[in-house]
Length: 158
Image (cartoon, rainbow, N blue to C red; front, side, top):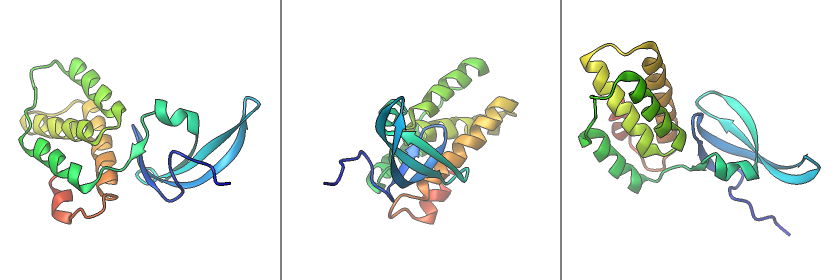
């Protein structure tokens, strides 16, 4: 009898704050005396491997990679969406961190867009530079896994 898992071996996923990854294996491990399915994930952006218990998947907002249809909507938001540059940097950093933690590609694209626009007007502080670099890397790691995406579409986010 085959077990019913949330994700399958070989499936591309997004792990918020870490970026795109691939399910390499599903292993049974004993955690606190209970057998539990654990996903072995290779994170492509950081070339790191994680083992995550299935019970942690839902609370960590791990999700499947966005499809090409949703990407068209995200490109539109990235190019034409409004940025709020009136927030003080500490408040902006908190808002952006919360967006990235959701793991949603739209939220990450908004963070990249807003910080790139802000960078055009003035120098970013060290924390915002790091956030822009990391979020941009995570965004690109997902874009590279979307089936049917073109190089032109990827370059929109650079």
